[in-house]
Image (cartoon, rainbow, N blue to C red; front, top):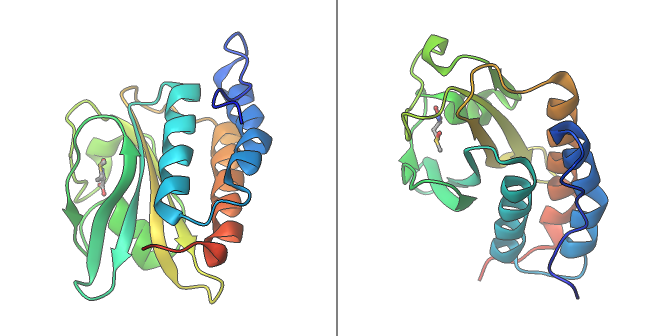
Amino acid sequence: MAQDLPIDPSLPRAARLHQLLPALEGLLTGEPSGIANLANVAAALWSATGWHWVGFYLVDQSADNLVLGPFQGPVACTRLHRGKGVCAAAWETNTTQVVPDVHAFPGHVACSSASLSEVVLPICASNGVVVAVFDIDSAVADDFSQEEVEGLEALRAMVERAWPTWSWS
Ligand code: SME
């Protein structure tokens, strides 16, 4: 299949994000590798939007922390711990965190000093337990519109629907 997703670069970013959804649905269908699929979701969103960092942290149950998963952007923190930062908040509360100013978020973990705003969405298994978080960072303050957050929620829902069919070895 063609590896270029049909995204129109002349559209506003929110529209590009929504254009990505059906294209990614097609890309994920039939591929059982969770790592490959998360890598392609991160790459597609990062290249379609230009956001600074796009990626996943996976819940490591045995270590009781979050471990870095597939991503695009600068090198990031390998492990994130309970009670500290935006990703941990999404994990522990199972709610999407929209942070217009990371410096105003108590305990924010600055993996990259260039990140000024971020959105982190929890990803749940079919039993409702959080298995990963989806982290999108911007180098611009207050950079996520309501429409874009809705697009990211739709992307999260797509990943959650497919998750039970994926394998990790
Ligand atoms: N800022 C996140 C850490 C992950 S990096 O931004 C990639 C946090 O506060 O959890």
